[in-house]
Length: 457
Ligand code: ARG
Image (cartoon, rainbow, N blue to C red):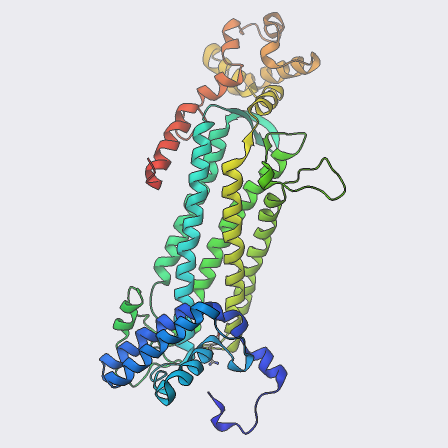
């Protein structure tokens, strides 16, 4: 396609390093859509005859029909998806195919294709995040009253409800979705017509091609249009953040599935065995979600480092923009589906959660708060008194609620029998009714609000 000034073909290694077809063939639908918009505009503007535009458009449809069945070819000498499609078009319709590239460059062509691809990727990712949110809401509703230990420093801190814990992830994934939506809004402008870097002298209609591809309008500066990939970096940033949230949830599943915790049992479909230890049920999918997050963060880093030193406008380094985006997208899709599957099917062991919540003096704060409320003790002093009560319980190897009243009164005479009303884990969670708190009534409200936001109420 560009051999006019050359007398020899490329070295085999030159060909291999130059070719992007092995990976950018994934852009074929977007490439055809962009070419269809372009040729329709060339016809409408009188840059091509109506007959030529029609021949080319029909030819592109025929190429697309072939790709639909067999996919694009693998021949490295075709270089990239843009050249491969044009070459096939020429085979099908003859020399008129050569008119398609009027007023266009591969530089604005690939920028257009890639924006279209990332836009579709965002829509798919959003659907995956939403499905995971639905799974979380369903389980949170079931477990609005299930008591579990809440942790700080992975030390038993205060009892919480499992529903509240699950809804924390709902919130994270809601923000992830809004990050993708923000990225989509900024991405949705068409670079087609920026040509190689400077624009074109042909009387093209960039607004028309933009509208035909569902963009909100054309980009403003031709140099910027062909040389920035911030839309892809934003996609990867949002993907990395979402995968980080997935990784934290996955990590909790790994911990919860361990024997010492025993908070969850993953069903057979979401467990793996060991080839040597017959008793094993490993949470491999959760571990891989955690692992994939590292790779997705790596994809973001890869593209940022690729872009950071490039002068305007296009440099071939930018061909390397696609593999990390494709990889991150594939890993994220799989991770979202796996996490939704696990969340939807896991068995929560409410008995184990309750036992652990009751064993870690998790209602110590409730005792301190009771002293403040009922005996007007300053909080710092109440904290100290409660510390002594915890020590007494530890010495007797019992829970706070099991301490005899006289032992408590020896520690502080202002304590009376009403204190036992706040020392159970159920009383503790029921009392946490502040906005965003863990009380079952708040969890049910959060679940209802979530269903309204998802449109599933
Ligand atoms: N395969 C190239 C890429 O992905 C297409 C653009 C090529 N442009 C050029 N001037 N060589 O970036």
